[in-house]
Length: 466
Image (tube, rainbow, N blue to C red; front, side, top):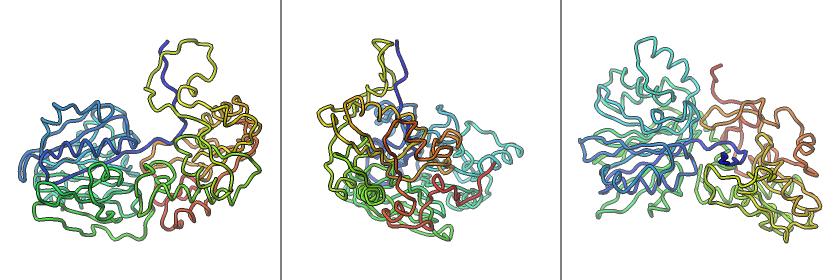
Protein backbone atom coordinates (compact mmCIF):
# COMPACT_ATOMS: atom_id res chain seq x y z
CA UNK A 1 0.00 0.00 0.00
CA UNK A 2 1.57 3.28 -1.13
CA UNK A 3 0.69 6.18 1.15
CA UNK A 4 1.46 9.87 1.05
CA UNK A 5 4.24 10.54 3.51
CA UNK A 6 3.33 12.13 6.84
CA UNK A 7 3.94 15.88 6.74
CA UNK A 8 5.21 17.69 9.81
CA UNK A 9 2.54 20.20 10.82
CA UNK A 10 4.46 23.38 10.07
CA UNK A 11 3.75 26.62 8.28
CA UNK A 12 4.90 26.05 4.72
CA UNK A 13 7.95 27.84 3.37
CA UNK A 14 7.28 30.60 0.89
CA UNK A 15 9.81 31.00 -1.97
CA UNK A 16 13.46 31.77 -2.61
CA UNK A 17 15.19 33.86 -5.27
CA UNK A 18 18.76 33.91 -6.53
CA UNK A 19 20.53 35.97 -9.20
CA UNK A 20 24.03 36.51 -10.58
CA UNK A 21 25.45 38.90 -13.19
CA UNK A 22 28.72 38.54 -15.05
CA UNK A 23 30.55 35.20 -14.75
CA UNK A 24 30.73 32.61 -17.51
CA UNK A 25 28.28 29.72 -17.07
CA UNK A 26 26.22 31.67 -14.54
CA UNK A 27 23.59 28.94 -14.74
CA UNK A 28 25.83 26.62 -12.73
CA UNK A 29 26.20 29.23 -10.00
CA UNK A 30 22.44 29.69 -10.19
CA UNK A 31 21.96 25.96 -9.70
CA UNK A 32 24.11 25.98 -6.56
CA UNK A 33 22.36 29.07 -5.21
CA UNK A 34 18.91 27.54 -5.67
CA UNK A 35 20.12 24.26 -4.20
CA UNK A 36 21.11 26.13 -1.02
CA UNK A 37 17.64 27.75 -0.92
CA UNK A 38 15.74 24.50 -1.50
CA UNK A 39 14.22 24.65 2.00
CA UNK A 40 12.21 27.71 0.95
CA UNK A 41 10.21 25.84 -1.69
CA UNK A 42 10.05 22.30 -3.04
CA UNK A 43 7.20 22.42 -5.58
CA UNK A 44 9.02 23.94 -8.54
CA UNK A 45 12.31 25.44 -9.62
CA UNK A 46 13.35 27.57 -12.57
CA UNK A 47 16.04 29.80 -14.08
CA UNK A 48 16.26 32.38 -16.86
CA UNK A 49 19.65 33.12 -18.39
CA UNK A 50 20.95 35.98 -20.52
CA UNK A 51 23.61 34.95 -23.03
CA UNK A 52 25.33 38.36 -23.34
CA UNK A 53 24.62 42.06 -22.72
CA UNK A 54 21.88 43.07 -25.14
CA UNK A 55 21.32 39.41 -25.95
CA UNK A 56 18.53 36.87 -25.59
CA UNK A 57 16.81 35.33 -22.58
CA UNK A 58 16.37 31.59 -22.18
CA UNK A 59 13.99 29.88 -19.73
CA UNK A 60 14.14 26.44 -18.11
CA UNK A 61 11.79 25.44 -15.29
CA UNK A 62 9.91 22.43 -13.99
CA UNK A 63 7.98 20.90 -11.11
CA UNK A 64 10.04 19.27 -8.39
CA UNK A 65 13.33 19.78 -6.58
CA UNK A 66 16.28 21.72 -8.00
CA UNK A 67 18.38 18.59 -8.54
CA UNK A 68 15.50 16.93 -10.43
CA UNK A 69 14.61 19.91 -12.62
CA UNK A 70 18.15 20.81 -13.75
CA UNK A 71 20.23 18.15 -15.46
CA UNK A 72 23.71 18.69 -16.89
CA UNK A 73 22.10 19.02 -20.32
CA UNK A 74 19.69 21.73 -19.19
CA UNK A 75 22.47 23.69 -17.49
CA UNK A 76 24.54 23.52 -20.68
CA UNK A 77 21.53 24.75 -22.66
CA UNK A 78 21.07 27.69 -20.30
CA UNK A 79 24.71 28.75 -20.16
CA UNK A 80 24.64 32.52 -19.89
CA UNK A 81 26.53 35.37 -18.28
CA UNK A 82 23.54 36.30 -16.08
CA UNK A 83 20.85 34.27 -14.35
CA UNK A 84 17.86 34.75 -12.10
CA UNK A 85 16.28 31.73 -10.44
CA UNK A 86 13.43 30.72 -8.16
CA UNK A 87 12.32 27.88 -5.89
CA UNK A 88 8.59 27.85 -5.24
CA UNK A 89 6.07 26.83 -2.66
CA UNK A 90 2.68 28.12 -3.80
CA UNK A 91 1.02 30.69 -1.57
CA UNK A 92 -1.15 32.26 -4.26
CA UNK A 93 -2.00 30.16 -7.31
CA UNK A 94 -2.03 26.45 -7.95
CA UNK A 95 1.00 24.17 -7.94
CA UNK A 96 1.36 23.75 -11.70
CA UNK A 97 3.98 24.55 -14.32
CA UNK A 98 2.28 27.73 -15.55
CA UNK A 99 2.77 29.25 -12.09
CA UNK A 100 6.39 28.09 -11.72
CA UNK A 101 8.88 30.94 -11.85
CA UNK A 102 10.68 32.87 -13.23
CA UNK A 103 7.92 34.26 -15.46
CA UNK A 104 9.05 35.59 -18.82
CA UNK A 105 7.33 38.07 -21.14
CA UNK A 106 7.87 40.39 -24.08
CA UNK A 107 6.69 43.87 -23.12
CA UNK A 108 7.10 47.18 -25.00
CA UNK A 109 10.53 47.77 -23.41
CA UNK A 110 11.79 44.35 -24.59
CA UNK A 111 12.08 40.80 -23.30
CA UNK A 112 12.27 40.45 -19.54
CA UNK A 113 11.83 37.91 -16.78
CA UNK A 114 10.80 38.22 -13.14
CA UNK A 115 10.79 36.09 -9.98
CA UNK A 116 9.05 36.96 -6.74
CA UNK A 117 9.26 36.03 -3.05
CA UNK A 118 6.22 37.27 -1.16
CA UNK A 119 2.52 37.80 -1.75
CA UNK A 120 0.44 40.71 -3.04
CA UNK A 121 -2.52 41.56 -0.84
CA UNK A 122 -4.36 43.47 -3.59
CA UNK A 123 -3.69 40.98 -6.40
CA UNK A 124 -7.32 39.93 -6.69
CA UNK A 125 -8.64 43.44 -7.43
CA UNK A 126 -5.73 44.26 -9.75
CA UNK A 127 -6.26 41.02 -11.65
CA UNK A 128 -9.98 41.72 -11.98
CA UNK A 129 -9.31 45.21 -13.39
CA UNK A 130 -6.73 43.85 -15.83
CA UNK A 131 -9.08 41.11 -17.06
CA UNK A 132 -11.85 43.65 -17.64
CA UNK A 133 -9.47 45.69 -19.78
CA UNK A 134 -8.55 42.71 -21.96
CA UNK A 135 -5.51 41.19 -20.25
CA UNK A 136 -4.93 37.47 -20.82
CA UNK A 137 -3.38 35.57 -17.91
CA UNK A 138 -1.46 32.32 -18.40
CA UNK A 139 -1.58 31.19 -14.76
CA UNK A 140 -3.18 31.96 -11.42
CA UNK A 141 -0.28 33.34 -9.37
CA UNK A 142 -0.17 36.93 -8.12
CA UNK A 143 3.31 37.36 -9.66
CA UNK A 144 1.84 37.56 -13.16
CA UNK A 145 0.14 40.84 -12.18
CA UNK A 146 3.56 42.54 -12.24
CA UNK A 147 4.06 41.62 -15.92
CA UNK A 148 0.72 43.08 -17.02
CA UNK A 149 1.20 46.28 -15.05
CA UNK A 150 4.67 46.74 -16.56
CA UNK A 151 3.43 46.02 -20.09
CA UNK A 152 0.73 48.71 -19.74
CA UNK A 153 2.95 51.36 -18.18
CA UNK A 154 3.90 53.10 -21.48
CA UNK A 155 7.33 53.83 -20.01
CA UNK A 156 10.41 53.90 -22.27
CA UNK A 157 12.67 51.59 -20.23
CA UNK A 158 12.46 48.50 -18.02
CA UNK A 159 13.23 50.24 -14.73
CA UNK A 160 10.62 52.96 -15.24
CA UNK A 161 8.01 50.37 -16.23
CA UNK A 162 8.84 48.35 -13.12
CA UNK A 163 8.57 51.34 -10.76
CA UNK A 164 5.19 52.22 -12.28
CA UNK A 165 3.99 48.70 -11.51
CA UNK A 166 5.47 48.69 -8.00
CA UNK A 167 3.51 51.81 -7.06
CA UNK A 168 0.23 50.00 -7.78
CA UNK A 169 0.77 46.86 -5.71
CA UNK A 170 0.45 46.22 -1.97
CA UNK A 171 1.91 43.51 0.20
CA UNK A 172 5.20 41.64 0.31
CA UNK A 173 7.65 41.41 -2.58
CA UNK A 174 11.35 40.79 -2.94
CA UNK A 175 11.91 40.70 -6.70
CA UNK A 176 14.64 39.89 -9.19
CA UNK A 177 14.16 41.08 -12.78
CA UNK A 178 16.46 40.45 -15.73
CA UNK A 179 16.32 42.25 -19.07
CA UNK A 180 18.77 42.49 -21.93
CA UNK A 181 20.97 45.03 -20.12
CA UNK A 182 21.06 43.98 -16.48
CA UNK A 183 19.48 42.63 -13.32
CA UNK A 184 17.25 44.67 -11.02
CA UNK A 185 16.61 43.71 -7.39
CA UNK A 186 13.70 45.27 -5.49
CA UNK A 187 12.33 45.06 -1.96
CA UNK A 188 8.90 46.30 -0.86
CA UNK A 189 8.66 49.44 1.32
CA UNK A 190 8.08 47.44 4.52
CA UNK A 191 10.75 44.80 3.83
CA UNK A 192 8.64 41.76 4.69
CA UNK A 193 10.92 39.24 2.96
CA UNK A 194 14.74 39.20 3.05
CA UNK A 195 16.99 39.95 0.08
CA UNK A 196 20.80 40.19 0.13
CA UNK A 197 23.48 41.36 -2.26
CA UNK A 198 26.90 39.71 -2.38
CA UNK A 199 29.96 39.61 -4.59
CA UNK A 200 32.06 36.86 -6.11
CA UNK A 201 35.44 36.80 -7.81
CA UNK A 202 35.41 35.08 -11.20
CA UNK A 203 37.19 35.54 -14.53
CA UNK A 204 39.52 38.01 -12.82
CA UNK A 205 36.63 40.36 -12.01
CA UNK A 206 34.19 41.13 -9.19
CA UNK A 207 30.60 40.13 -9.98
CA UNK A 208 27.41 40.66 -7.98
CA UNK A 209 24.92 38.09 -6.73
CA UNK A 210 21.53 38.27 -5.00
CA UNK A 211 19.82 35.75 -2.73
CA UNK A 212 16.96 35.47 -0.27
CA UNK A 213 19.41 34.10 2.33
CA UNK A 214 23.15 34.32 2.84
CA UNK A 215 23.53 30.51 3.05
CA UNK A 216 23.39 30.61 -0.77
CA UNK A 217 26.50 32.84 -0.76
CA UNK A 218 28.42 30.40 1.42
CA UNK A 219 28.05 27.58 -1.08
CA UNK A 220 29.50 29.63 -3.97
CA UNK A 221 32.06 31.41 -1.73
CA UNK A 222 30.51 34.83 -2.25
CA UNK A 223 31.12 37.75 0.08
CA UNK A 224 28.18 39.50 1.75
CA UNK A 225 27.99 43.11 0.59
CA UNK A 226 24.70 44.45 1.98
CA UNK A 227 21.06 43.69 2.63
CA UNK A 228 18.74 45.35 0.12
CA UNK A 229 16.82 47.90 2.16
CA UNK A 230 13.03 48.21 2.32
CA UNK A 231 11.91 50.41 -0.58
CA UNK A 232 15.26 50.07 -2.35
CA UNK A 233 16.05 49.22 -5.98
CA UNK A 234 19.49 47.87 -6.93
CA UNK A 235 20.57 47.75 -10.58
CA UNK A 236 23.47 45.61 -11.86
CA UNK A 237 24.80 46.01 -15.40
CA UNK A 238 28.03 46.24 -17.34
CA UNK A 239 28.32 49.79 -15.91
CA UNK A 240 28.48 48.43 -12.36
CA UNK A 241 26.08 48.69 -9.43
CA UNK A 242 23.55 51.46 -8.71
CA UNK A 243 21.39 51.80 -5.60
CA UNK A 244 18.34 54.06 -5.32
CA UNK A 245 15.10 54.35 -3.42
CA UNK A 246 11.97 53.70 -5.45
CA UNK A 247 9.77 54.28 -2.38
CA UNK A 248 10.29 56.07 0.89
CA UNK A 249 9.83 53.58 3.72
CA UNK A 250 7.97 54.63 6.85
CA UNK A 251 9.54 51.78 8.80
CA UNK A 252 10.10 48.07 8.31
CA UNK A 253 7.74 45.17 8.99
CA UNK A 254 10.13 42.26 8.57
CA UNK A 255 8.55 38.81 8.96
CA UNK A 256 9.66 37.55 12.35
CA UNK A 257 8.87 33.96 11.30
CA UNK A 258 11.94 34.10 9.06
CA UNK A 259 13.97 34.07 12.27
CA UNK A 260 11.71 31.59 14.07
CA UNK A 261 11.50 28.89 11.40
CA UNK A 262 11.72 29.66 7.68
CA UNK A 263 15.33 30.65 7.17
CA UNK A 264 18.18 28.19 7.44
CA UNK A 265 19.97 28.50 10.80
CA UNK A 266 23.32 29.14 9.06
CA UNK A 267 21.92 32.21 7.28
CA UNK A 268 21.93 35.87 8.21
CA UNK A 269 18.50 37.47 7.91
CA UNK A 270 17.52 41.05 8.73
CA UNK A 271 21.09 41.77 9.77
CA UNK A 272 21.56 38.96 12.27
CA UNK A 273 22.44 35.29 12.64
CA UNK A 274 19.34 33.09 12.50
CA UNK A 275 20.98 30.46 14.72
CA UNK A 276 21.87 32.95 17.46
CA UNK A 277 18.39 34.51 17.33
CA UNK A 278 16.80 31.09 17.88
CA UNK A 279 19.13 30.36 20.79
CA UNK A 280 18.13 33.67 22.38
CA UNK A 281 14.45 32.78 21.94
CA UNK A 282 15.06 29.50 23.74
CA UNK A 283 16.93 31.24 26.54
CA UNK A 284 14.13 33.79 26.93
CA UNK A 285 11.60 30.96 27.06
CA UNK A 286 13.58 29.32 29.88
CA UNK A 287 13.26 32.58 31.85
CA UNK A 288 9.55 32.96 31.14
CA UNK A 289 8.44 29.33 31.51
CA UNK A 290 10.75 27.30 33.77
CA UNK A 291 9.70 23.84 34.94
CA UNK A 292 11.33 21.12 37.06
CA UNK A 293 12.73 18.56 34.66
CA UNK A 294 15.72 16.32 33.92
CA UNK A 295 16.48 16.91 30.26
CA UNK A 296 15.81 19.30 27.36
CA UNK A 297 14.97 17.58 24.05
CA UNK A 298 14.31 19.34 20.72
CA UNK A 299 11.82 18.31 18.06
CA UNK A 300 14.30 18.00 15.17
CA UNK A 301 15.27 19.96 13.29
CA UNK A 302 13.12 22.99 13.99
CA UNK A 303 13.57 23.05 17.75
CA UNK A 304 17.32 22.39 18.03
CA UNK A 305 18.73 25.91 18.35
CA UNK A 306 16.02 27.05 20.76
CA UNK A 307 16.53 23.91 22.87
CA UNK A 308 20.25 24.69 23.13
CA UNK A 309 19.39 28.18 24.36
CA UNK A 310 16.86 26.80 26.85
CA UNK A 311 19.37 24.25 28.11
CA UNK A 312 22.13 26.83 28.66
CA UNK A 313 19.82 29.28 30.44
CA UNK A 314 18.13 26.63 32.63
CA UNK A 315 21.25 24.59 33.36
CA UNK A 316 19.42 21.42 32.31
CA UNK A 317 21.10 18.82 30.13
CA UNK A 318 20.51 18.98 26.36
CA UNK A 319 19.93 15.63 24.62
CA UNK A 320 18.91 14.54 21.12
CA UNK A 321 16.11 12.35 22.43
CA UNK A 322 14.44 12.20 19.00
CA UNK A 323 16.29 11.33 15.80
CA UNK A 324 14.99 12.52 12.45
CA UNK A 325 15.31 10.49 9.26
CA UNK A 326 16.27 12.99 6.55
CA UNK A 327 16.01 10.48 3.71
CA UNK A 328 12.26 10.15 3.46
CA UNK A 329 10.50 10.78 0.16
CA UNK A 330 7.01 12.02 -0.56
CA UNK A 331 5.46 8.54 -0.60
CA UNK A 332 6.15 5.30 1.20
CA UNK A 333 5.04 1.68 0.94
CA UNK A 334 3.41 0.83 4.27
CA UNK A 335 4.17 -2.84 5.06
CA UNK A 336 1.29 -3.37 7.49
CA UNK A 337 -1.86 -1.29 7.75
CA UNK A 338 -2.05 -2.03 11.49
CA UNK A 339 1.20 -0.24 12.38
CA UNK A 340 0.34 2.59 14.77
CA UNK A 341 1.89 6.06 14.32
CA UNK A 342 3.61 4.73 11.20
CA UNK A 343 3.84 8.04 9.36
CA UNK A 344 5.47 10.02 12.16
CA UNK A 345 7.81 7.14 13.11
CA UNK A 346 9.22 7.04 9.59
CA UNK A 347 10.46 10.61 10.13
CA UNK A 348 10.97 10.80 13.91
CA UNK A 349 12.23 8.07 16.22
CA UNK A 350 12.55 8.46 20.02
CA UNK A 351 15.60 7.22 21.93
CA UNK A 352 14.51 5.19 24.94
CA UNK A 353 18.00 5.39 26.51
CA UNK A 354 17.62 9.18 26.73
CA UNK A 355 13.92 9.45 27.59
CA UNK A 356 12.98 6.53 29.84
CA UNK A 357 12.07 7.60 33.35
CA UNK A 358 12.91 11.25 32.64
CA UNK A 359 10.97 14.46 33.06
CA UNK A 360 11.37 15.87 29.56
CA UNK A 361 11.15 19.45 28.33
CA UNK A 362 10.24 19.10 24.65
CA UNK A 363 11.21 22.15 22.58
CA UNK A 364 9.65 23.14 19.24
CA UNK A 365 9.32 26.42 17.36
CA UNK A 366 5.56 26.49 16.78
CA UNK A 367 2.24 24.68 16.92
CA UNK A 368 -0.07 24.99 13.91
CA UNK A 369 -2.96 22.49 14.01
CA UNK A 370 -1.55 20.48 16.90
CA UNK A 371 -1.52 17.18 15.03
CA UNK A 372 2.25 16.75 14.93
CA UNK A 373 2.70 17.92 18.52
CA UNK A 374 0.19 15.33 19.65
CA UNK A 375 2.02 12.52 17.84
CA UNK A 376 5.48 13.61 19.04
CA UNK A 377 4.35 13.83 22.67
CA UNK A 378 2.89 10.32 22.33
CA UNK A 379 6.20 9.08 20.87
CA UNK A 380 8.21 10.53 23.74
CA UNK A 381 5.87 9.01 26.31
CA UNK A 382 5.92 5.67 24.51
CA UNK A 383 9.71 5.68 25.01
CA UNK A 384 9.17 5.80 28.76
CA UNK A 385 9.25 9.51 29.60
CA UNK A 386 7.79 10.17 33.05
CA UNK A 387 6.59 13.68 32.14
CA UNK A 388 6.55 15.73 28.93
CA UNK A 389 6.48 19.52 29.20
CA UNK A 390 6.10 21.15 25.78
CA UNK A 391 7.76 24.55 25.33
CA UNK A 392 7.25 26.60 22.15
CA UNK A 393 9.85 29.24 21.20
CA UNK A 394 7.27 31.54 19.58
CA UNK A 395 3.90 32.96 20.63
CA UNK A 396 0.63 31.15 19.83
CA UNK A 397 -0.12 31.27 16.07
CA UNK A 398 -3.67 32.62 15.95
CA UNK A 399 -4.03 34.04 12.44
CA UNK A 400 -3.06 33.35 8.82
CA UNK A 401 -0.26 35.14 6.98
CA UNK A 402 -1.06 37.12 3.82
CA UNK A 403 2.52 38.07 2.98
CA UNK A 404 3.95 34.97 1.32
CA UNK A 405 3.50 32.10 3.78
CA UNK A 406 1.07 29.24 3.24
CA UNK A 407 -0.89 29.10 6.48
CA UNK A 408 -4.11 27.29 7.36
CA UNK A 409 -7.31 29.24 7.90
CA UNK A 410 -7.90 30.80 11.29
CA UNK A 411 -10.37 28.03 12.13
CA UNK A 412 -7.66 25.38 11.59
CA UNK A 413 -5.13 27.07 13.89
CA UNK A 414 -5.52 25.38 17.24
CA UNK A 415 -4.35 28.39 19.26
CA UNK A 416 -7.11 30.56 17.76
CA UNK A 417 -9.79 28.55 19.57
CA UNK A 418 -8.11 26.80 22.52
CA UNK A 419 -6.21 28.03 25.57
CA UNK A 420 -2.72 26.73 26.39
CA UNK A 421 -4.20 24.38 29.02
CA UNK A 422 -6.76 23.06 26.55
CA UNK A 423 -4.07 22.50 23.91
CA UNK A 424 -1.87 20.71 26.46
CA UNK A 425 -4.74 18.38 27.27
CA UNK A 426 -5.47 17.77 23.57
CA UNK A 427 -1.87 16.86 22.71
CA UNK A 428 -1.29 14.89 25.92
CA UNK A 429 1.46 17.07 27.42
CA UNK A 430 1.84 17.56 31.16
CA UNK A 431 2.22 21.29 30.55
CA UNK A 432 2.51 23.73 27.65
CA UNK A 433 3.99 27.22 27.51
CA UNK A 434 4.71 29.62 24.66
CA UNK A 435 7.22 32.44 24.38
CA UNK A 436 5.51 35.80 24.84
CA UNK A 437 5.39 38.35 22.02
CA UNK A 438 7.47 40.71 24.17
CA UNK A 439 10.03 37.98 24.85
CA UNK A 440 10.23 37.09 21.16
CA UNK A 441 10.79 40.69 20.09
CA UNK A 442 13.40 41.17 22.79
CA UNK A 443 15.22 38.03 21.61
CA UNK A 444 15.39 39.25 18.02
CA UNK A 445 16.37 42.77 19.04
CA UNK A 446 13.36 44.57 17.61
CA UNK A 447 9.88 45.88 18.28
CA UNK A 448 6.41 45.93 16.76
CA UNK A 449 7.65 48.84 14.67
CA UNK A 450 10.37 46.74 12.99
CA UNK A 451 8.79 43.27 12.76
CA UNK A 452 5.52 41.90 11.41
CA UNK A 453 3.98 39.55 13.98
CA UNK A 454 0.46 39.57 12.53
CA UNK A 455 0.12 35.78 12.72
CA UNK A 456 0.48 36.17 16.50
CA UNK A 457 -1.27 39.46 17.30
CA UNK A 458 -3.57 40.08 14.30
CA UNK A 459 -2.01 43.47 13.56
CA UNK A 460 -1.72 43.33 9.76
CA UNK A 461 0.40 46.22 8.49
CA UNK A 462 -1.33 46.56 5.08
CA UNK A 463 -4.97 46.37 3.95
CA UNK A 464 -6.09 42.78 3.27
CA UNK A 465 -8.62 42.17 0.50
CA UNK A 466 -11.71 40.31 1.67
